Picture 1: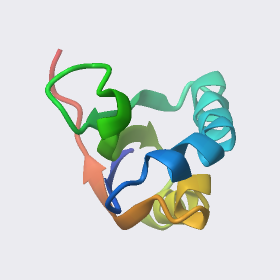
Picture 2: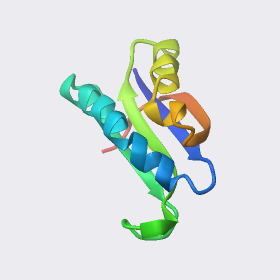
Picture 3: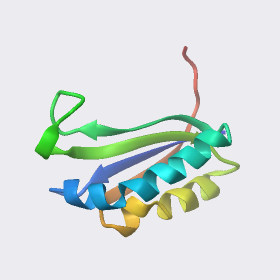
Length: 99
């Protein structure tokens, strides 16, 4: 089943994101290589794909896991969590309907 991992950043998280980004992206690429990643990306702080110094307000990952518990464990081990980027992470089951 798919699970949505919805994360909200702490204030002024850009420098924290920058330092942890290579490890964060490597984990997402592993999910992609396993054919389990549906979509992933950040929420820009401004209404533009490249918000510059304004940074991001959070992230969304939708990926396939065996259970809610395994999705939560994956989310808890994210390098952004360890680096203090996220103030809150919510994991929910996700049903892909469209397209």
